[in-house]
Each structure stands twice: as C-alpha cells, then as structure tokens.
Image 1 (spheres, rainbow over the protein chains, first blue to last red):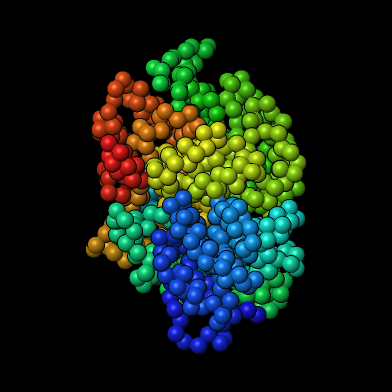
Image 2: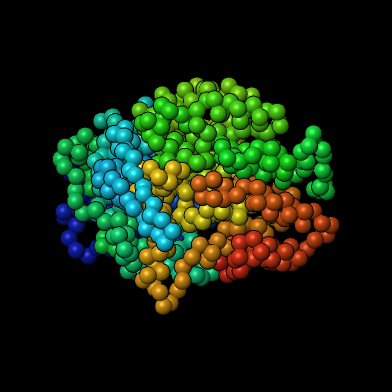
Amino acid sequence: MQKAKIVNNKILNKQLSDIDRIYIGNDYCENNLDYSKINQLIDFYNNKVKISLLLPFLTDKSFDKVSNILKNLENINSKYSEIIFNDWGTFYYLRTYYPKLNLVMGRLLTKQKKDPRADIILKNKQDKVKVIKSNDCNKIIYTKKVPGTLVDIFARHSVESDEIFDFLLKNNVSRIEIDNLVWNMVSLLPKDIKVSLYFPYILLTVTRYCGGMNGKYSKVCNFDCRNKATLLEDGFYINGNAVYYKNDILPSNKVFKSNNIDRIVYQNNI
Amino acid sequence: MWSRYNIKIYGIILTMNNKLRILPGLSPTDSIEAFYSKGIKEVYVGFYDDISEKQWPVAFNTINRRGEGGSFFGLKDFSLIADKAKKYGISIYVVFNVNYTKQQVYWILKSIKQVSKFSSVKGLIVNDINLLLMLQKQKYKKEIIISTLGTNLNTYAVSFYKNLGASRVVLDRQLTSLEILNVLEKFPKIQFEIFFLMADGCFFIDGYCTSLHVQETDQNKRYDTTVQSTLCMDILSSLNNKNSKDIKFSYKKMLPYKCNICTLYYLKSLKNITIKIPNRTITNSDGISIIDVVLKIEKELNKKNITLKQFQSFCKNLLLENKDIKCNPKICLCRDLYAKSKNSK
C-alpha cells in the first residue's frame, strides 16, 4: 500500500522515509495555491519522494499561473510525477498543452454520494413512525423502506462504464481518487485503473461564497481556510470554503482489494 | 437592439414576444398555458417511471435533480405534456443530470430513446461523462445541454464539453459577472444558460455538492422521516447556534452574491444567453412570479438610453421588493465587472 501525504504549501522537516509520495497544492480552492512557493517545493521534494501536484477546480484567472508550475514539473521529467485534476476544463487544458504528464482524476470528480446523514435512511434504521406534535393536531409520518438497489448506487463512484475506462486510459489517466465513505464501497474498475483513498476527512462540498459561509465577507480572499476549522454540530467541519466530515475508520482489506485501492492519501488535521 | 414588448392574441391566451430567452423548469403542477402566456418558448422537465421508482426513488436525486415533485411520472403523463408543448410551440429539454451507475444505464438509455421520439423534445440536459460518451457513440441526434452539475467554471470546460457534442452549456452559478462575460465572448456560437435570481438558496457549487436532498412529496409516508434539511441549511443553523451573539447567517445574506440581475445590463447585447430559472415545486419556488420579475427587468432594459446607474437603482429596488433583500455591492458577483468598466472609462 502506497502512503501519500498532503503537504499543501509546506516543507516537511521531519523524516520522509515512511512516505512514498507527497501532494503539493490542495483540492478545495485556487486562491490558496501559493504559486511562488510551489516551484520551490517541487525543487525541495524532488529526489526525496515522488511528487503529485494537487489542483483544485480552476477558473480562467489561474491557468497562466499553473502553466509556470507545470513547466517546472515537466522539466523534472519523472515518470512518477503526476497532476491531479478536479474539473474537466483543467483536464482539457492539461491534455492539450501538457500531453506527456501523468494525470489523475480527483475526488471532486468521482462523484460519490458522501453525505453521512444518509446512513440511517439507507440502513432503514429510522423510527418506523414519527409523530410531529403541534398545537392544532399531531401529525404522523410513516417510513417507506429504501430498496437495496438504491443502497447499491450509494456505494459507487462515477467511473463505471467501458466507455469512460477507455476514455481515461487513452488520455493517460490510470488513477482515480475517492473518499472513505461511511458505508460500503463497490467498484467495477478494471485492474489497470488504480484508486487513491483520502483519509481521514471526506470532502463533502465546496463553495466560492466562503465569505458568506464563515461570516467574514471581504472584497478579496481573506484566506480564512488557513485558520483552524470550525467544528459544527453533527460532526461537520468548515474549513474556509470547504465542508468536511471525519471518518477515521479504514475499510477492510476486502474493500481495499475489490476497489483497486493501492494508495492512502493522508490529510493533516484541519 | 431589443424591440419593445409585443402582445399577440392566440385564442384566449396572451403571449409576449420576449427577446430574452427564458428557460424555466416545468413541474406536473405547473400550467404550461401560463408559461406560454408569458412568452416562454422552452422549458426543462424531469422524467421517471415505475421501473426507476422501484429501484432508485427519484426523491433521492438518483434520476435527475428535480426530484419527485419536479418530474413527470410515466410515459403517459410525459406524452400529454409533450403534446401540449407541441401545440404551443414550446421546446422541451429533458433533464438526466445526475451520475448513473452501470445498473441504471439500460433504463436511462431506454428512457432517453422514448422521450426523444416526441417532436417537442429538442434535447437533453446531462452532465455524466459516462452518459455523454455513450450518447456520442450512439450519435444522438438532438441537442445536448451540459448541466450546471458539469462544473462549467472555465473556458476550457466549454471546449471539453463542445468536443463531446454539447451545443449549450449551463454556466456555474458561482461565476462572477466578469467571468461569465469572458466565457460568452469566447464562444459566440455556443449557447449559454445563466442562473438568475436563484430561488432555492443553495450556496455550494452544484457539481461538487454531495449533500443529501430527499425531495419527496408525500407528507405522510416518507423515505426520510427525520425530514432532514439540506447540508447548507444544517450548516446555517449550526453556525447560528455557534455565533448567536456575533453574526446571524441566513440565505438572505447569501443571495446578493448571485442575484445576477444587473449583469444583464452588460449581457443584453449578446445573442447567446438564456436566463435559467431553477424553479421546483418541491421547494415552493414559483416559476411564474420569477418570470414576471425577469419580464419587468427586460422592460426596464428596453427603455431608451437607460444608464447603468439608473438600471442599478432599479435592480436594488426590485431585489428589496421581491426578495426583501438589501443589495450589498461589497459581496456582489457583479463588482469585478463594474470595476473593469469604470477603469475602461
């Protein structure tokens, strides 16, 4: 099992001996990519560990800046370096202008159904009858049973057809990334497409309205994501523009194997 | 230039020749006649049937994102609305805009074939790459619109989807006005849909949000008896509990980010935009009242020599009247466009 570590924009001073690969960058916001530092980080980590450049979804303002980093990564000329993309526009850009780079389909694109609040419903563990009391009258709600076929689709990601397998492999994408769901995970991937599993945080959703979400409106980005995350009720974390949920139970070996998972991507505490 | 309002009489229904293309969602409880009377020439609809319902209830957004109340059940009901649409010259786009598993593909392709037989159905709204690749392989003949769930956040995304056969792209709700304008100008031959006066208050990027929305209509028998709200609603209430003394979080504070009204001042001369209205019966969003607001704005824009300042003032009043929201330029998505236009002067 490969071990990867997300370092964002930081240089890790401690031993790298137990880590196979580091992820530079992030998958939640383009504003928090420190472009000036990324080349420095690539130079530092090169020859020590394998390098992945983790890209969030990008808007048009970022492509020129990313281009400079990619040129540096291309110069390393390592067959082990890779770029993780999280929107199809970035994929198109990378494939058009950097056809030799190894690409990885990021966890925002594999479209798992992740909301942990679904678990109780999928397991049909809700109260069979619920009474909502009000002044006028009590309202009774009965439960409908969730079919097993629905549970099955909650276990899957979006890379499921022969067409997309061919498409990815033809475009030099032989790895996809997923989150560690709180329920079972099922995959139909062929052996030549490998999977990375993020641990322990599930990235549930992102926004560009982070000023609204954290109540700190500002005309320009205030990098609130660099502060400590806010832990909400029900175990959700808000970190800048992203919402996470912690699942620190790794799946069984059987699930690792059946899902082609051969890499765990460790995230720092948020 | 846009022409003035025309009102024509077809039978007993008055219709307007709107110059703005407006695309509302049509639910089973909506009146297509009412939409027609407002000059609507295209709508989008959801479809599901008993086969899909037994296996993957539409309430869980496993067939489309319109959910139970926003979708037509069965081919019989669908054919009725398709025939009515044909009578009124309204084009229908059918949404199959979630990601599908291998088990669902047979049903999806069969359903696409069935609904596409109707002449009023002009195309599909999709985002699943698996499905797009299959449609391309099958040489699907009607239009393909890329849903906002395709995370259309940059110009390269438009090129990507164009290569997969898209003729129209729904831009992400969270693009700024300047970003929208840049994309529109780069692809004059592609049609774009932009969201307008968002009614449902979602504040995450649609294509990346994995929040559970169980959209069911039966109030007495439900899949979700906890009657969970969405993740955004839970987060807002949780934040309010945490910060009760400091900040009150509400959708009303979020909405000015994305009302997009005054963007129209800059977009009005572009031919490749459609105003998308994300109304769903389940969220009690009334399509007709939003259409009325859009028509009011169009009327204002048609006034001769209207200045940006006058139009902005109109938009501010409109937002206050219709949504009880005070415009806040500090957080407005239009602000970068204003800054650019000021600089260019």
